[in-house]
Length: 456
Image 1 (cartoon, rainbow, N blue to C red):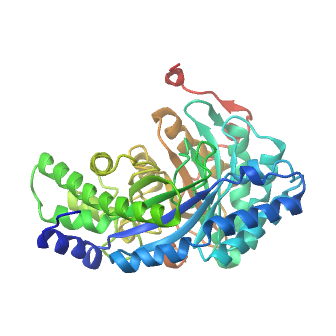
Image 2 (image 1 turned 90 degrees about the vertical axis):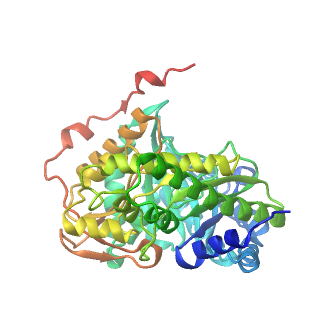
């Protein structure tokens, strides 16, 4: 039995009530490998039966834990085996894959989850015909569903970067934007391109249930930028040793909340516990911002000189605190820097402190990449491919996960503002380098793995 002092109970209550501490998601990972069938109708029927059976109590269990422990659980989500694998035997056209997406969307609504992730292709070294068809289906799938999240893994440190896929995805991102232009190109907010993607990430849009995982698993993503910001405000002006210790201790406390929820959800659902992902994932709420933490550390705005160093420090100390709190820290774990979902980041863009180039530099030391960034709708497809290639190269060379979730908002130009709503927030349309890279991305083939990938 835990022996908690009154001060510890009060501290946890304050984290929840005043500092935006929450469990961002309980994500139930479900393997669909045993659903594979060469007949599309049978495949969709098997998928429906399995997800409804395994996930039937997910949402109610999350609500029960939330009520009993007083800990907000913002999202209940499902991740599945990459559909590019599951649908390979049955799907001969992009439209076949869209039928799976619509089926999954209906299932997600029936179960009551917020999102279902895993409309995914794993093409880091090459594309099968089925995986190419899935990629080609993404614009239609994103336009005709509400709760489906899609991801494409185009590179890794071990394999290099599949530039054929990167070039194709420049077209796919733009087509997705066009097909959802009546909703500010929102479809692109549900599509992420990844390098070194983890198999156990509970955060959308990049979540999928990796083939190395058990038949089903519970992963929890916990977040607390406001808690870290409040803790740092109490040691303002202290040296780096005190700063680092404060972040580390705070991350420990936040991760323990996630560990508690994960253990309860695992026990009640009868599903093995996977990992706790401690990611400082911001929301549009005031006081729930990673940019505010960077400013508390000492930069005037996110993007000012010193920002990359401050973010590196923050990310490292968050991970150190997390691994002391749980034996199974995984996923991404660290600090996210999405623009639209972080009011402090938006303020920095509007002040002229934060540019796309500075964001790219910051992704070298954070947990993800160029995330939820609105750019002009007229941006050339090849320029989008170039942005993806740059970010994948950072992940490949630095042996870390990087991602691109960028939104060319059709009909919008630099200076306009885009409203996405909910956790996705709003974003100023950011300027992009006007010079092209068409001759580079059109070369075709694969960028080879770096020399330090040879570790056998």
